[in-house]
Length: 306
Ligand code: ATP
Image (cartoon, rainbow, N blue to C red):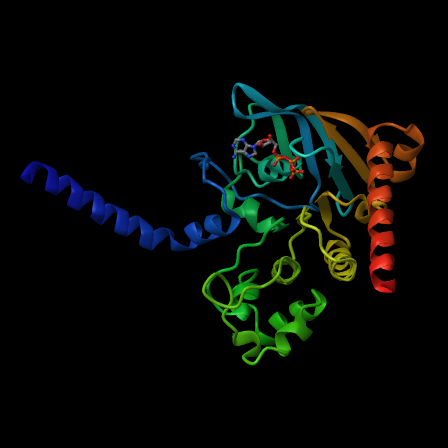
């Protein structure tokens, strides 16, 4: 009995120490809902950001060796430009954003930012230059101000409010009895998908990163909310290197390049107009979405005239 209790106490002690030290990191990973699988190289240097060019060079990746997800993907996002990634569900779109953030290491190829391999730089410096607006933002059980300020902890009250304004969520917050001091999250006020996404946008506006990943929500938002979110996303991505993981094709018409992923490879690439002319997978996806939107619209008009 004695033999067992000592190591258990010791493990308990170590666990508490680690928990204390890692609270922030843990919170961040809880927030992003991903495991921490990679470690810095002993000689890892901070990323030296020049203008934020992103490059995927023949990237191969599998979560599990038996099932490759990316089978040789190459593309470049020039500094300040926007590349949109589209493709069927499960094609590996969100995986691309996780790899740029280096939540996992790739099996072959390279991912470079301003010519530096993401495996050679510290994770802290890498993540400092990338802003991520995820599909589903998980909020901390804290105030709405805290949740926005998480983007830059030393931001002033005025800066938090300005970010909320730009993300088009300030009116909503100001109408709450406790305003910015309202508790949100699991144990507080539950926000809708669109509201949570706007908190994430406000957070990213405060962080002002040179590189931005927008992972669009799959969940349907009403047209008005979608337009509002689109306006704030356009604003935050202006002049920044942006990768949009797109589910709604209407939001990426103006992307500098659209990449269509299928079965782990790039099936098509080019501008919206070019891809429509190609009459391939993208053109089919576009037609299907247009038909679905038109059907929804007819249904709405029919309901309103009842
Ligand atoms: P969607 O449009 O539905 O969001 P996606 O193209 O973004 O899909 P990913 O999330 O990149 O797809 O996932 C690609 C594939 O990898 C899927 O088949 C998924 O089940 C698998 N996958 C994703 N995350 C993991 C993980 N942590 N472990 C194992 N497999 C995973």
